[in-house]
Amino acid sequence: MTATAQQIDLIKNSIKSIPDYPKPGILFRDITSLLEEPAAYAASIEMLTSRYRDAGITKVVGTEARGFLFGAPVALALGVGFVPVRKPGKLPRETLKETYDLEYGQDSLEIHRDSIKPQDNVLVIDDLLATGGTVEATVKLIRQLGGSVTHAAFVINLFDLGGAQRLENMGVDCYSLVDFPGH
Ligand SMILES: O=P(O)(O)OC[C@H]1O[C@H](OP(=O)(O)OP(=O)(O)O)[C@H](O)[C@@H]1O
Ligand SMILES: Nc1ncnc2[nH]cnc12
Image (cartoon, rainbow, N blue to C red; front, side):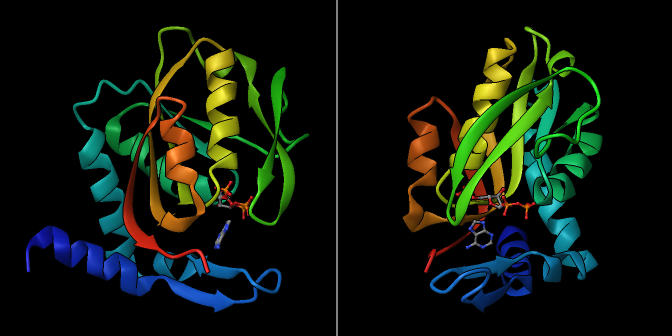
């Protein structure tokens, strides 16, 4: 087995699956068990970082809350700034807002207007891609502020929920470390 295949195995085996959470019919892929295993957590950050080391990324944007756990370490490792996209009312400076659909509900996200500059080449990171609504809203926020986004990266892709296609249709290349069915 190659070193990369070993890293992927370590990551995949560290993720727990919980049926019917938070609602009946949802199979919840839980990354808290990955965070508890330093080797798996380190492997996920290392794989995400190495993929984008030479991509000219100037900022990493991560979405609340689980996107922070992967986006911030990758930003540090790449030596670029981290920008949080947060649920409404959490950011203190002037914000821009987008509403989006979740696999199990609807929500809004906000970003600080002054965090993205027109010359920024932004990498969006989240723990998990399901329908793509969260990252679609995030990409829209960044683009409205003049930033460029061509890459989004995830630990998990729920491959049968259409998220990657939805983002590819917006010109965003998607990369994920492990794939699971959504149900
Ligand atoms: O591709 P989508 O269908 O948009 O779903 C994926 C999003 O859903 C989860 O976040 P959630 O909104 O549950 O928030 P949390 O990270 O604060 O738990 C997950 O962390 C992703 O951000
Ligand atoms: N099935 C799922 N597991 C974990 N987080 C999610 N966010 C949206 N769908 C999810």
